[in-house]
Length: 365
Image (tube, rainbow, N blue to C red; front, side, top):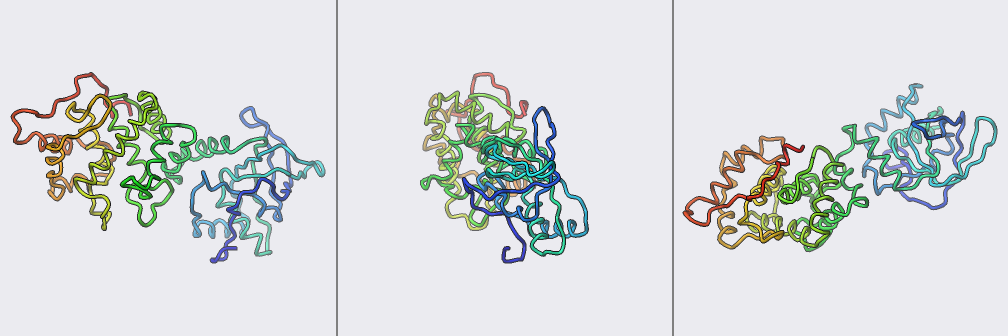
C-alpha cells in the first residue's frame, strides 16, 4: 500500500519471482501467436512486475481510485497485456496454470494497481484478466509497449522517444547529450510523461530542433515519435556516425544560451527562446544558409553571433507568434524576421541560401 492507501506494483525487478496463478486459463491464437488468456488469482497480483525503464514514471491516483471503485461495483475492465520472460509454467488442472518465470506488465499497470487495491480490502475479488505472451524479453516488451500506446493519447511521445534510445544510435546520441553535465540543458530535458521541476523543454522539442538543424543532410518525416527516431538515426548515418552530429547539437544550444541565456532561466513560461517553435525556426534558418556551415560543421562567426544576440525577443510581434502558437514547426513569419534581422545593415556578406535543392521537412511530414 502507498501513503494514500492504494497498492502499487513493485518497482523492483527480479530475475526470480514468486509463482503467479492464472485461473479460467485457456490458450488462444492472436495474430498468429499462441497466448494465454485468463484471470490473475487475487493472491498473485503482487507478484507481477513493472519495468520502469520503459513505462510511465507516475501512476494517477485519481484514475486508480475510479478503476478500483468500478471493480468493486462488478464492472469489467479490459485485460492487461503482460509478458513472461521465460516459458516455464505448470498446469494444475484443465483451467488453472502456475507461471514460474518473471511476468511483466506491458500495458495496464493502473488496472493492476486498482485490482491490488480492491484485493487488499478483502471485500471482493477484482477478477483482473490478462493476455500473456510467453517466452519474451525486455526488447519485445518495449516494442509491444510502443505499438499499444502510439495510437493512444495517454502516453507522451517523450516516453516513446526515450524507449527508442536502445534501438536507434542517433537517438542514443541525443539522449546521452542531455545527461552530460557539460551540456547547457543537463537534466533539463523531459523524457517522461510529465515535466518535473527544473526541466525546461520536452525531448520532442530538442529532437525536432536537431532534425531541422540538419535538414540539409536529409529530409524525413517527423509525424510521430517513431518517425522522429528514424529520422535522427538516418541523419546520424549520413554523418557516418561521426561525433560532429553531437557537436552541432551542443553548439546550437550553446548559441541559444549565449544569445538569450538558458542557464539562468527563472520563469519558464516567459522564456520564449526555449519554446519548440522558436528552436525549430532558428534551427531551420541556420540549416538553410551556407554562412553557418563549414561542410558538416555548424559554425557562426563572431559578427553573426553578435547580430543574432540583438534579435529582440521582447518585441510584441515576436512574443505573440511564439506564445500564441501551439505548433512546434518552423514559423514562416518568424523565420523571415530572423533572416531580415541578420541581413539588416549589410550590403555584403548577407545570408546565402544553401544551393543544393532540398525537400522541406514540412512536405515530408
